[in-house]
Length: 114
Image 1 (cartoon, rainbow, N blue to C red):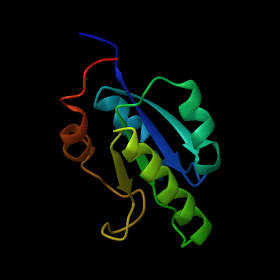
Image 2: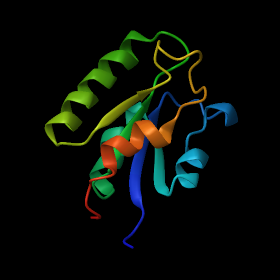
Image 3: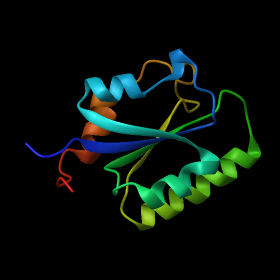
Image 4: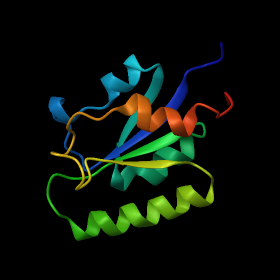
């Protein structure tokens, strides 16, 4: 078995325990790095290509965050890196229970170990 696949979690800087995805990712066998939206480009420049990026939506509406998120999604899509929006309007609350095994697994199961 190769190295753990790495996932980048980009959030709004709020690191409350009830919004943490790193523990759930570890339970699924993924290594994760968490960064704020402002630091995402810098982190992507220094880590190995992530298997996926989880974009955690802020709990409050923030137009500047939404613009940066759209730009980041476009850049990652161009590089072939899947982006999953977590805590979007379709969920009951931001950071709420998410079936990451299903949502993330479908994107990265076929990805080769890097």
